[in-house]
Image (cartoon, rainbow, N blue to C red; front, side, top):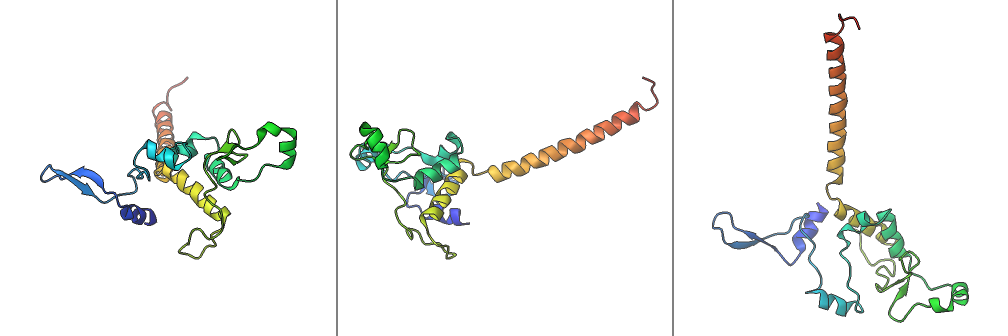
Length: 184
């Protein structure tokens, strides 16, 4: 219900065709629609992000090993480089405009820390909005975005396995019944 409400609030409606007239029309958004980009095009996206093109995060949790944990670690992993590391590796200083994050592949990421302080989000049920909690929620949401039908697929898979087991039992029983009087 909450995802449907969020989808309905998007300003951009989806293009469609009116089935009665065949003319172009628009419809309200539904959860399976693609998220609208906050940028008009790639040039605008780069201009707003220090010349780094932001990735499509809809499949990030499927694209990375332990994807949900990776996103959580990435969101909470921003920190200053340790003086010991800078002393051992003086050339490893984070370049201007980048941010140190040990969970990112090359340690330096153009995205500034998105979750900087507690209370950036207000939860309807009164949950305390800590950086840790918000990061878990973002990670869970991106996991759902990558696999919105995961629960339905698991239920269908369970039903299929159950059917196969029952069918195998019936087939084995029929086999035993048909061949019971035949000497082997």
